[in-house]
Length: 70
Image 1 (cartoon, rainbow, N blue to C red):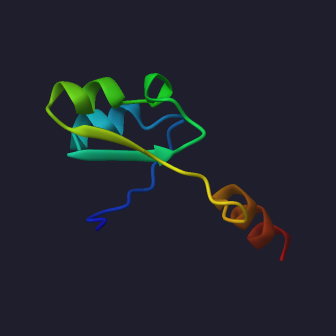
Image 2: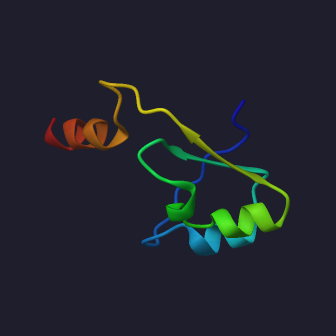
Image 3: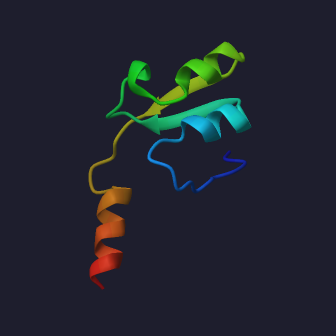
């Protein structure tokens, strides 16, 4: 279950992750945990970084592109 989704304006969510310190930080499987911004902060506080598999045909980037073109 997802408790909260947050939109941020910065280039990376680093400051947001430091402020919120989530229990779980989720990224797509196209990342490695070492490349997840804020992973060190979450793990240092006892949280977990989870990578979820990429599902073919489901892409938020593609969805945003389609919305902008319509």
